[in-house]
Length: 414
Image 1 (cartoon, rainbow, N blue to C red):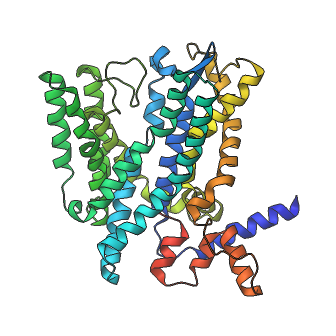
Image 2: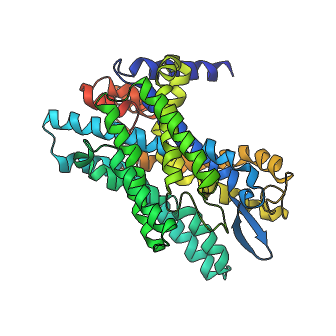
């Protein structure tokens, strides 16, 4: 046990020492919190109910709407887009300074984004075929595939915004916010077509993304954070109280309006409040990230961000499926219609987290670049040390490279 603790301590120290001194660690902390918020939010408000011989999706928010504040805590996508806009605009400016072409820059970023997706789609193609061949209920297959594929919309939007980064670096966030406002006005105020709401999928997330670009330009001060936090919270409260918008910031099965699918004005103003809070937390996070253990935890989450995001629903479904062998277990297969369901679901979270760790062990190589052709297990002593270092902490290798590569490799950008 003592040897394990010593090795962990050495690994933490290596990560801290290898991180470039000019790296803004609060950016990585915000990204890690955003990813973990989405994961925990899905695990808490998504239920796979065993109904006869099939599984169907449900949510405790449909039965206990007073739980809506849970969605305020764990619906953190706006923070992710804020960080994404900041990192992308900073990365593109750095690439231009090095003479890197736009095509090469974009190709590198999209490759990091979509390479891990192939493993998810490949596995679930096999699982789906297997379910259909064995006569599984179509409702069950649809429910499972929806849980797996629905988070991928986020990657498509993020990829689209990344591709237009050079065009949006100077856009004022008020412009896409105005688009969202007018779309909702036509949809809800003048009974416009429902398809018009899908304009907000791009416009809504462009708001925090362009805020990230403003962060890169140094335009977002502490005062900006307070304005965004208080103003966004006040407008959101008004929209929920008097504008007819739902209190939940995630979709609720059976609800006539979803704040997230597609994004509404309430979701966007709520995101502005979250971005304001994130900006206010920059300095406290920078101080916290000076602690090697805290920074190592954040670095590990960032290195595994795509794997965690892509496989967290699969982990939940795997635990649900295996649990069926023991019958209908509370908090896992039962209808989330009462307070009793909540403590049971909380008790299942460590099991689901363990399943996610197993998924990470199996598929993290697709994110880290470990699945490559021409790899060698052998090699001379120096090469062996380098590979062991990469496996234990990829940030250590970065110290031997040029500064910009080190910055990219120290904690992989999503």
